[in-house]
Length: 237
Length: 61
Image (cartoon, rainbow over all chains, first blue to last red; front, side, top):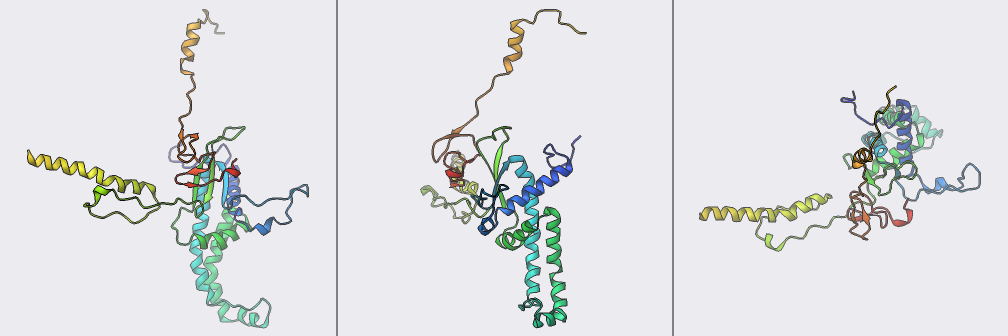
């Protein structure tokens, strides 16, 4: 029985599945690569140029795979986010001198380096942890240098999954977009206050990202008034 | 070996197939462009989803 075993098997052995999820997670991260990377980059035939992705931070896959890989990607980013504070703390002991210069050598052999090394240790450990999860150095670099600062103030939920209308040709797999949040975000306009709600106490929450709350605010007066009327009628009787 | 004793009547076949009918997918018009689409999906024509364009039509799959 499958009781209390989480996660989809996706029709693969555990090693196949692990490799596939790592690969997919790295692929998503690598779409954030600089366009410079694609200059002078050719397919195996040596002639066809490789184009940068049309949209950065986005991959198209099946809904099930997207949901499985989401956790892996988010865990990597969270680890990277938490390492940022250690990197900042270590900065005070760092040197701006170039490697192998005299100034750098004196720093490297002094107490400052010991301090810097101790302060950097958690950040280095975080990098190694993420590397052990993805096994892709370039992806790890992008996660720590670009994605972690971008999502520093966001407590999780760095990705979104959007379902696509058409199934995949060939195996009719349900397709979805997996992308980093921050682009294509929902724009919310504050709900207009209904005219008859003027006497209702103004406890409407400030502008939020969620569209559901807007609806709730708009509906509140409607729900309240009949109740109030009913109460008034009951008193009359 | 097990062998059928009687002819399988047309009625029997019909009864078996009474549950085989395929239903059309439930769709509703996209609020942006009016194409009929299933719910909770990005519109394949205009790329509209929940109040914003997430997938400009050009890079449609």
